[in-house]
Image (tube, rainbow, N blue to C red):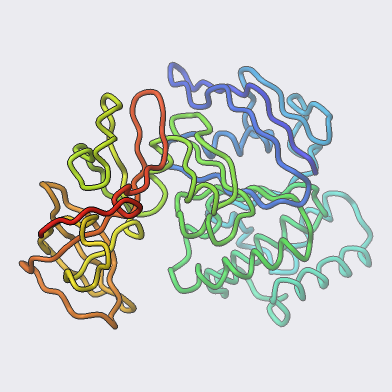
Length: 354
């Protein structure tokens, strides 16, 4: 299903929850709506589903305006955060529920249910009740029930929020594989960055009722279009005196400029580890945290605390150590613009004593 949304608005009393939201989604794509709580993600999802009515704007499915269509006529499947399974029904009957509403024959229902049982890895659990299943199994039942009537659009509202971390990781890969096999256009709401990056073809960053940016996970991480997106995605440090760092003196040409520096933009170590000494800064280790495969290091540079990572294969550093720091690049922004600035000293080194 191809989806087009234009000028979507929604108020709840005096609260403007969704503000002039417009976007398109190509058929067969899996889209993640990502953003902080209260940003408008679920409101957008519920308007697509027909569970809420927009105050203004249009929702088009394959070019057809569906604003006034009830949910059952929109060709959608909806997976809720809390599964919403019927406790008194078996797995088989939960999956068959929508098919019975459509008054399909018993043979059609059985064939479709068994197809989905196989597809979702629930074979052998058909006669169990929800309370006899694990959280991951209950969520699979919810997916199967939503897919049973063969919807053209699948909507998921934080589908893994109620599941423990280990099972959630497994279900992410499973969902991605399932959507690819079924080939259905899908939209899921999440506030988990890792989840969105791992699962989605594209991500829409939603904040304060607006779409901040839409793009592939790679594009959004590497080329953020707004300061909010840059600060929301991934770990970062905000620096207000970026023009004081070597190689970034030109940042002073723009008024009220701040910088966001990601961990991978930074290298730390002893002076002998850096071929271009002129591009480095003095720094001091504040804290160091073991992260299993690497060290996470907090280092103080010119009054700023920067966060970076260091390989376990390199010399071990300790809190209080004086080191050197190389900032390769920074994401700069002010009230009017944003851009990436490279450390110019790497290209134009000068002799300097540290």
